[in-house]
Structures are given as C-alpha cells and as structure tokens.
Image (cartoon, rainbow, N blue to C red):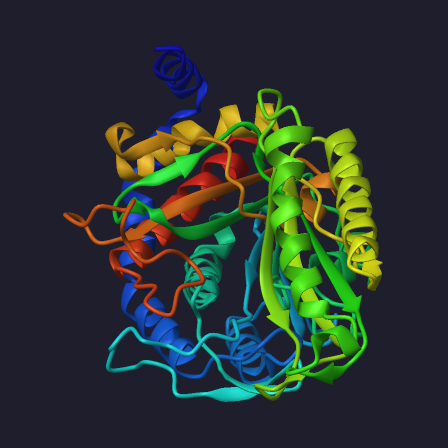
Amino acid sequence: MRKTMLAAVLAALLPMSVQAADADVEALAAAVDAKVQAWRRDIHQHPELGNREIRTAALVAEHLRALGLEDVRTGIATTGVTAVLRGGKPGPRIAIRADMDALPVTERSGLPFASRATAEFRGETVGVMHACGHDAHTGILMGVAEALASMKAELPGEILFIFQPAEEGPPDGEEGGAEEMLAQGIFERFRPEAVFGLHVFSTLNAGQVGWRSGPAMAASDRFNIVVKGRQTHGSRPWGGVDPIVAAADLIGSAQTIVSRRQNISKQPVVVSFGAIKGGIRYNIIPDEVELVGTIRTFDEDMRAAVFADLRNVAEHVAAAHGASVVANIPDTKGNPVTVNHPALTARAVPSLERAVGAANVVEMDLNMGAEDFSFYAREVPGFFFFVGATPRGTDPVTAPSNHSPEFFLDEEALKVGTRAMLQVVLDYQRMGE
C-alpha cells in the first residue's frame, strides 16, 4: 500500500514531458532490440574471464565510437571501457554500469550459441561461460547507449557509460573490478550525482523487475586456509599427520560459526566452502590440503566476528589433529554491502512500474549474493535493480541459478532490461531539467 501511494505521489510530481515518456521509451528500445539480442548472443558465444575481456571490450569501444560518444577510454582496470554522452540540454550527470566478465564454468545449456571456450584458471584448464548474465548486461547497455545517443539533441544532462571487467573478481595476484576502475579515476574525470545498474536474475520470471531499498546485496569476502600435515603412506597413517582428516573436521566445525555463534535474528550470515584441493594418489596421505570459500554478511561487526571465529576454528581444530594452518581470512579485499540509496530508490521505482507495469515490479528480500557495484554506490547514490531471467511458467525456485552450467536467460529479459533502464534514466534526467 505504501509503495503504491509513493508511486502515485511521485508520478503526480513528474513534469508532463516525463509522464509522456513511455511511448518514447518503447520506440527507442524497439529500435535496438534486435541489436541487443545479437550482441548478447555473440558475447555469450565468446566469453572471457575477468581482466581478459579483450574481444568484448574491443566490441564495446568500437560501438561507442561509432555512436559519436566523447572521451571513449579503454584499458581502464586492464580491460574496462568508459565513454560520455553529452545531451543537448542542461541536466544531471549520471553513470550507468554494466559488467563484462564470464565465469570458469563449462556450459550445459544446449543453446545453439553456447560457449565452447576454455581458459586457464588457478592453474587448471576450465570451460568459460556467461553463467551469470553479464553478456546480457553488456548487450543491454550497448543498446541503451545507442538509444540515448539517437536523441542526443533532446537529452538533458550528461551520462557516463561504464563497461567494467572482473566483477566476479580478478585473477589471483591482479587488481580489477569496480574498485580498480574507481582507483584509476573514472569518477574523478566525470563525477556523477547518481549511478545505476541492473542484473538479470534467475529467482525472478522474465517480465518481472525486482528492487530493494537500503541494504540489498551482501558483503562478500573470500578465504583461503591451507592445512599442513606430514605426508605418509596410506597404509601407515600413524607415520604422518593427515591434513585431509583435519580439513574435514575443520569444515564440520566451521558450520557452528553461523548456527551457534552469530545472532542471525539480527542479520543473515553465510559461510560456505567452495573448493577442497589436496593429494594426488589413492595411497598417499598428502602434506597439505587447501580450502577456499566465501563469507557473506550485512553487518560490519558480524563480518569481523566471523573472520575471527573462522581463524579460531581453523587454528584449534588443526592443532587438535597435530596439524597447523596458514589461514588467510579474508585473503583479498572483499566487496562491501550493496546499498540502494533510499531517496534515489523511491524516485526510480515508479519508473520501473511505468516501464513494465506495477504488477511486475517486486520488492525483494535481502540477497546473499554480492556485487562490486557496491563500490560505486559508496561514492555516489546508487540504484541497482534485478531483471527476471527465468522463462514464464518455470518455477524460479527450482530453475538453474546464476553461476550454474545450466543457467538459462529468457531473452525477454533483454527487452525488459533495456526498457527499464531507459525509463529510469530518462525520468531522472528530465526531472532534473
């Protein structure tokens, strides 16, 4: 009820030029729909891991130059691309961001344009797939840039387009992602008053758009724990120290960090182990086992407490087995909580409703996924929304999730995302005239 009243009040405050913008948005989006689909399919078939998006970045930069955008810059944070569109009328300065990187996942979608690419990741040859939908984000923003450039003379204000590498994290030993884009000065050269982004999401059906005000996505931190034992023959386990048994005990004990040590009635917490590597032969107990995983939190005090608890468990459980550990918790600088600025969100939600219909706009629960869009939204007010990817008629609860090798994007999401972003941007720019 409050959301409906808020939308009605804000709609009444909009100037007539904005209230009449729906037809403009549909015409602008329809003119680029086929291109967005073609770009997305091409990028999907040729995915590239973080900081390796060379082909994708070249495609984006060529398109932005062809549109006549100003200050097209490449090679930011290794492979990032930015460009500026200056409208013919005075108005706000904003930024819109898309991410370009794929994941080390072997695709099992069965699509005719499925990826067959491989790459090296952490010393192994892996399949590469756009299993999170960044191909869609890139295609949508390329389309939004073309649509807005086509109305440059009537467009109020200025827009910075950000095509970012390595949202999923840079390769080990490298810098990358949103934090590095900012460190290399993109907001110093062009300081926006607001930043917008979107993400296709399996937990919503195609045609739906989701949003949340305030904290929306969790802080994300990686950890790396190496359990060090002493190698021995598998027939003589007493002749060494078994790091596999110690690692197994460590993983089991770590589950109590969330279930017994954190007040999850305050905020949710997740501790997940994502990989275990140790040993190479069936009858040799190895010297060490490596464990890697992720921690997700919404509260800084809880975040610090989980770090301390996991170190404590790792060190003491290992010691109980006669082993030792090297515990890097966290092992890199993680992503902070993604926070949607409340006032900006209140201003943008009516635009989403205008773009896809109020019945298709969903207020979402806290999302334990993470996004490095959070770094932009710490610098200036940000609004990050979700676009449904799962086909209508398919239960999104059971559909393959983002990061799955079976992740499937209903291409209606491309049309919805293009229209939603155009509506949000045009309403914002025109309200600022």
